[in-house]
View 1: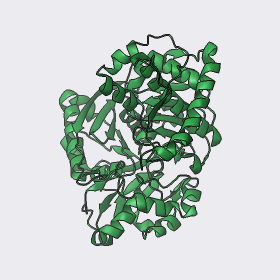
View 2: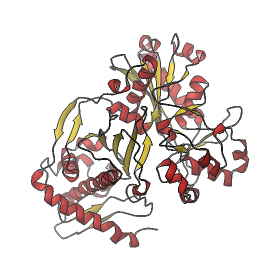
View 3: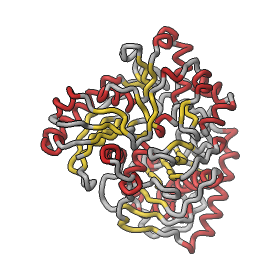
View 4: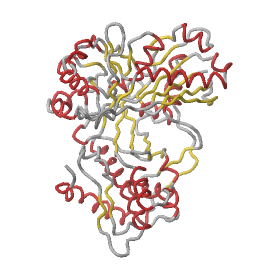
Length: 485
């Protein structure tokens, strides 16, 4: 048996799989986020341990014999968090999370140093780890002076599980301290934030062994024998391992609160000015690129709250047959935009409203606006050297066939629907635990799920969609001078 532990923002998920990758069971432990000031987002690392204990206890209650047979554990986690420890491994302050924006001044200052983009392949976003340490150095100098270790959230869990200070490439690529092409810490970038490599965890690949489960925990959980803990992965790379998106050209589109277009790469292809993320993948000698839009189902949920109709009712009114784009264009920048604009202050808009623009027309415009934002991501990925022949759709928004047909037509590629199952980050982490414990071939283990169906682009509407996308592209520069600041 193999255990995947996924440390998310709202909880820890524990998933148990067998040697044939059949899911035996899963359980959860809940987490809360503390927001003591505007723009702040923090968690106590002790709460991660409590939530993990709760999740594993749930598995043990339901599957004690199976849990006892665990031989490998894989870790997945929310990225970018700054977990600061002293020389005795005591936590110095609450962890500053990925969605904390307090360090935007420090991020801009680091990003102005051309070496950061040159070595990491990415813009220094406020959510990344390095600017958070620069903020601590400026505003909490007593804390900064005591920092012996900087760990990412899942790697603090690893310290508790194994006693080891270790990390892996995919999560570390989101710190702004990794030389992403060489897959090693950059002493130059660390020095720019008054840190050195001694304060960083040892790096391994996500498929490699990164410690063994402490006997005390093994005994508590009823597990016998040596249990290895894999390097694991950041949450998006772990999800890609669960989805089988590990070979060059494989891609998925995630329609969650935010939207992600994720492509696996066989080589390192940075283009930071496009706001595409270029990170190491969890498998050796692989990388990935990722475009992110900040409002995907969030845009539809906003429309739902305004109209008083459920998201399912709104999309149901459209039917399943794709229509030509209407004259109304929606820009889904409700909380700014990441790829390709890297613009925190831009806001959304409806353009082209007329007396005839009823609820159904507005719903159609919202879905098309998100589809065109994902097309922006595709163009950004193409500009960075990656072309995508087809995508697999995941996330809550993928339940709408109309939306998927709109995305397929906007992107000009088929959209595959996976068969029912849970292929998320916990499953990917469990796969990494299996690989580390058995030495199995990573690509042979990380296979894609069976395809339940494919939605093809609607060829008869491709010209109309191309024209509507041109109109969409022209609107961002037009509204930017008048958007929120």
